[in-house]
Length: 251
Image 1 (cartoon, one colour):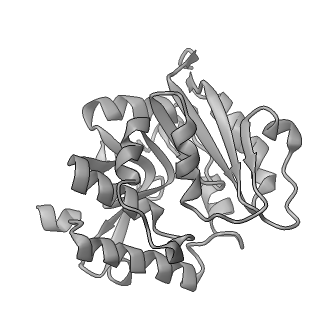
Image 2 (cartoon, rainbow, N blue to C red):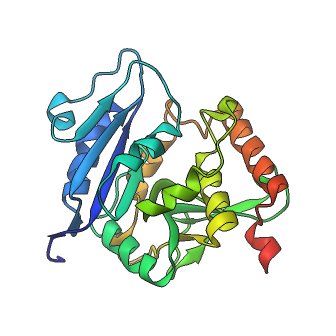
């Protein structure tokens, strides 16, 4: 096992509708080969959801009484004091070398890094063919993607690009993933990447697949809701109309 050390990193956990996953996720973060300096916990309001207070008390926590949507956790990230930030969806349990994997990859390919990458194979976004790389399509080497999700690793200063242009408030529940990639491409000339997910070493994976399939397709998942997917694709197409170039357009 890799010797554990502390990195210049803040991890942000997201609490919404999966309180039963929080302890498992927190334990996976604290078992990383490179530990965070701090763990933040962001909770949007969700009625009847009881999160483990003993875990929340170990974190720098915001527990809200309103649902501010999926973008707000990236505003919370602005308060981090470290060079790096990693934001996790609440259905994502990483292997214990995921942070290490992201840091090494970022040295070679500075930009945005995630555990699942979407590559659009047509101009139609999610309405056309696309494929995924990462935990749901293992890549032996670093892969480039149009969008990454489930976790986002980045240098904190890249948030200056994320917030350079503000989203339409009607997209409070979707679009933050493509927005980040679009802003990095437009304002900083940086790409979006999926660190290696070798088939024979899941310690490097950003999401352990058995956990991802169990938690990611339950009733709390936005992506399995047709209306949620439609909102996601609407924002994808707005970004493309604004100038975001898919990988297929850059080859």
